[in-house]
Image (cartoon, rainbow, N blue to C red; front, top):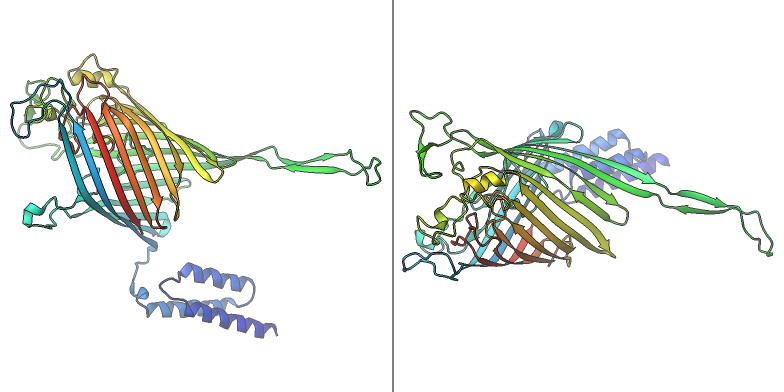
Length: 515
């Protein structure tokens, strides 16, 4: 009877596996079911192998089975997203800056520049798990900008006629290789997803840095108290004292601590060639006197250590102090940073915009993003923020021609978030205040939307999202900012052609589909 039942179970298992569509049947699912049947002694090992062979043969005859993966690949994930966006940006000049000669395109006092754009983006990637603890990834995306994946409708219609595709190009956004063979350690090389814990204050979320990264993370679990207590006092049913023992138990206090350390060596600017033929070129952009242009590669180095504490009742706190510094000068960002000037008119080849906005001289930045979260009933809530200081702010201000402004070296952000976007009908709102001073941060890395890739700006931002389905999200963003120190420019180059940018507004409405 046992053999008969086992044979029936074997036939049922084979039939059930065979009728499932091969496009949705994963090998590990079938294998897990077969292993369970063997463990329950319903089928033998030999019969399980026969089923596996049958499934392999079946898959090879289907469309899904025609996909052939090399032996080192153990798992591959296709993912991506597409987004439609309406965007409005506006910036205003101040009322004191000198004016250029009157004419078209010359800014006046309290003059506004506005941009309305309909845009889209597409990102498509593969995450690949390889044998022997290796992994790799590649992602293609629209746009060639390091801080944006957006393409604007109609922006290139004059190139080859209306609906031209000159700007609708696909670029390599990520291409990396990694190794996880060491306990708690991940090593990554290439153009990679951001390996550091950051905020929009210091890093634009679209930037995928290039170079090397080393990540270590270890989890500690602690329990305090708890257990069972006993009490000898009690009363019998008849009203007299009894000898029964009363017991009560309490849950232990559980604490989880994730300790991490992230290190990175990013190739910021490759000087090519490092040893040019003939005499080295010179520039007079810094001091007015000729000086040699540096010809060494520029690297950005990062050291980050921190911890995430998870308490009972869904309460957590995270802190991630980080130190950034730069070595070498490259041949693109080597001119000293100025960041705009109050004494020059807006625009033009000799105006405020023409002063250097991208120099990375005198930057040794300490940054500390943090976050605290909890649940109010079932509603996720959090407060978050960031604080940064440039230890070389005095030198950066001096090189920019403002020796008395070295105190303009700080940046900070604080905000509150309610809700979380995970599934259909979920919603989320973030509101935050941000303040970045002229000599505090690298203007090449700050977020390109809030506030237009600039420093020496402060203001508020509101972000709200609602999930129309598990894959489709609608988001809106509004930001309003103004100049922090009215005696300085607003360093950085964004979509609004004004410096100093005395006032700024942005509104974005997005429809995003993830797959």
